[in-house]
Image (cartoon, rainbow, N blue to C red):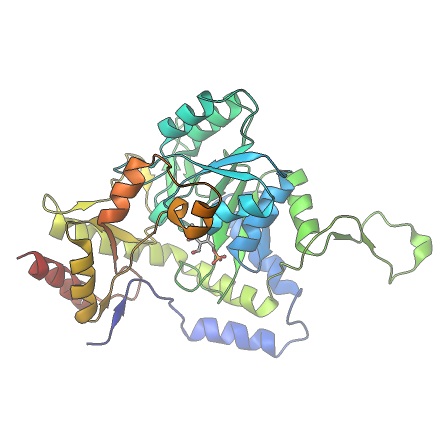
Length: 380
Ligand SMILES: Cc1ncc(COP(=O)(O)O)c(C=O)c1O
């Protein structure tokens, strides 16, 4: 049997044809596919606006800048995420404050965030970056209420969760990144995620003002609107210190065809998850699914004793299980800037026990059974 990774892209002939047709066209970047991808993605998640970027890390950077984060400000996020969710705060020269996770959902624990906020004077924090970790949507309605009470913005790191949703108190299905509660949603199109563009990302928002700022910052801070006609057609103005964080047209073409099959992919991921749960129910702990929540299942995580032993055993069997994540506050960089004694009990306990099993749309039933039997065999 071939090696079984924990996640992988699903590229078919339709995806390849879409990319090739852009390569044969006039525009490799900033062509019509970028706009098309943005508008289809916005529609998919139910947001007003979408801004394509070259990866989610750039997108997180633009998001904190658009929300005016600056040196000395403070933002709360989760330690159980990829480092980029926290690093964007540092890019703006601001301080990262970690709150603990919920030991059952593995999401940023709203009570821990509330405690942290309430332990400081009003105005101490500027924002919160919750992560729809492993594909499980955060209840953004609850976070919005907390944020509003303390005048904070919210960036939803939805990199793991396109197609996931939670049902709010008005019985509305809120797709991750729909902008009903968070100010900006951020998605990643790294190949291991649901939608593969090679590298790529998308920002979603319902605020016209934020949309315009994000668009400006994505391309060097250059504006072509509202310019005096007397200058001539070539003229442009750089009005902000921006970046080149653009996505190319051929990546956008791939993003469109990938997006078209995302619902099928998420459905298959949920079938795989159900099969794992059936096999492990009552024996092995896995991520809770709160009522009214549809998990997009980027990852399927179990918690076990002797995690390192299981990891090595599975790798010896060609199953490339992975650990998500080494807690961000324990990274040498974060330790070097003072996170030596963060009291994040649940995050650290979770990290000592977690392991991600393979989950991706093209994982076959046979491969999954092999994974399940191998896990069981290790503990026999
Ligand atoms: C939760 C989360 N946020 C942000 C990122 C950064 O995404 P990208 O690789 O597109 O920059 C990742 C990527 O792994 C992620 O998992």
